[in-house]
Amino acid sequence: MTVQALPKAELHMHIDGAIEAAVGYDVVKKACPDRLDELFRTNDNGEIEYNYDDFIGFLNCIDTVAPLTLQTPDDYETLTYSYLKNAAQEGLVYCEMIVCPGMWHKSDTYDFADMMAAFTRGIGRAEKDFGVYARCKATLERGSSTEAVEKNWWATKQIVDNSDHPYLVGLDLANYEQLGDIPGHKIFFDYIEQHQKKPLLVSMHAGENAGPQNIQDAMDAGAKRGGHITCVMEDPALLQKVIDAKFHGEICLSSNAFSKAVPKLEDHRLTDIYNAGVRISLNTDDPTFFFTTIGKEYQIAQDVFGLTDMQLVDITLMAIEDSFAEDACKVKCVERVYDLIENAYNYTRQDVVAKRGSGKAADQPKLK
Ligand SMILES: [Zn+2]
Image (cartoon, rainbow, N blue to C red):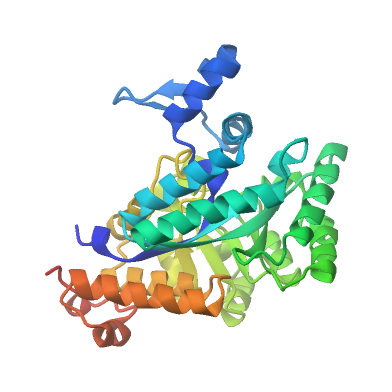
């Protein structure tokens, strides 16, 4: 069990997907008790968990529970702080949170500036108390209905208005890939690029529940990273392009298993993707909805897929290097990685540099 002391980083965590099921249950019980059985179930351990069996069912759960639970800036601050606190205890050094400006597009009271202020408070408190760093990327959501387009335009303008916020470092495009291709949504990203007050780098959900073409589309649209890229091994020519471009894959193992993006967990091509030379990170996606934590994702990568401690350290460093955070933040994160390893293991930072990514048994650090 040496994995739990390893430093970790994630680039793909929807803060709306980090609501504890028990918290969501209490909110739904008050707001719409007739939907409790549809949205929640009790697991074999007697714990309340979200009730769904596929990606559409998952979207039904999160799209109902999140707006009911996250109604004020204080709700977002509390959630941000508690998530980072728990994850820091599992070794999380850096988190790039996916935040959704459109959540409040019908609110008369709050807008994205209020949301960013709440994240900033939660992130600041967590950094001070637990030494964990976090930044935000604002997501638009796929959809072609009149309401979806109107919501995306509202969010797009809110993003532009807040684009100089120091903790807003990137953009994303989320939601079920069948709800719309990337070219159909490029107009929003072009508008932001033309009007933003500082450059925001782009990641897009791609290759999760649709084929490799979506990964190609994300690259063509200027994205530096892709959310999931689960199917990248299906297209050898595309795989080579991904490697050559250093296009980063935000891998989400538990998410893919629970949403059936892969038939079962063991079918994920994580090991092949890593060994091929794709730059990747390990991520929780929507942690409480997928019954996971960042510690569990790293443990699964070792127990199920055989990645060594030094390969996991390599993945943590790739995540920090490919994050959208400003350089000063990245430097602090890398320093913290070295500190955590030197404190817990028999390795110096020079050992980490020399053995980074090694799969050999002789090259693995030992806990002190
Ligand atoms: Zn996601």
